[in-house]
Amino acid sequence: MATTTTDRIEKEVLLSAPRARIWRALTDSKEFGAWFRAEFTEPFRPGATIRGRTLYPGYEHLTFGIVIQAIEPERLFSLRWHPYAIDPNVDYSNEPTTLVEFTLEDVDGGTLLRVTESGFDQIPLARRAEALRMNDGGWAAQMKNIEAYLRPAS
Amino acid sequence: MSAARRSPRAGIEAPIFSGLGDPTRLKLVSRLAEGGPQSIRRLTEGSGVTRQAITKHLLVLDQAGLVRGARRGRERVWTLEPRPLDVARRYLDLVSSRWDDALERLRRLVED
Image (cartoon, rainbow over all chains, first blue to last red; front, side, top):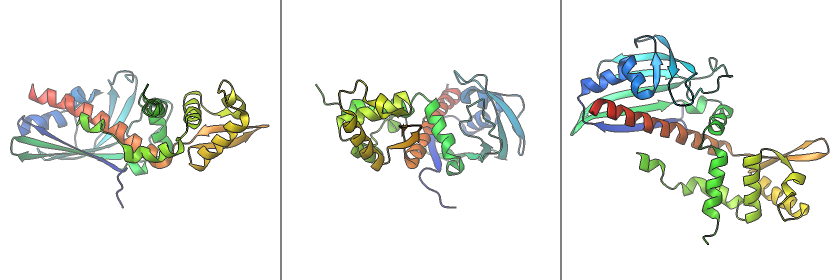
């Protein structure tokens, strides 16, 4: 399948922490929840479908499901989920998911963590527009930015 | 990373600017963005411009793919129409900035 610039996100973070420490932060569900701002009732294991509750400020009431894919010790951790599933009135279960992959690699100066999330082009466009509307940085705010940008300096 | 997401995105914004190269049109888009779909009558109110001028500007915006008109009863109601690619890119920016924040929290967790 062709991959467009709107289909995937790639992040790279160079961390000075030992690889084993980062691996634990990614694959221990409690630790994952601590930085991702979510709560999981079960440990992560390959193939498991796990419910989580978001602790993201303003969205604390929402639960979501993730499906763990690969767990290859200290190298690859991957999962699938419904991105930005923040509307409590929508049943996302029949919609496509995105694939999130975390990989670790030793490099000069520490450990390189790569995060990719792909498959956004399969997510209904209306759903993506809705996420923008529900977000503070959405269309209306963008239009204000454009307006301010175009307003002649006085 | 946070610096990267605040970088100028002129290339993406440019097509929007071309449709908005006029203060009245810019104001129309702002009003539609903030007030939702509206009739020409409502868009004319308080604009200081004639109904005919508003109609003309709406047609320009329509041609640029920025708005869409639909008949509702005896009136035509105009809606802002952000283009699909624009929605897709802005959405990716949104998800991307959430990742930046989350990964920064991850860094603090493992490095402190």
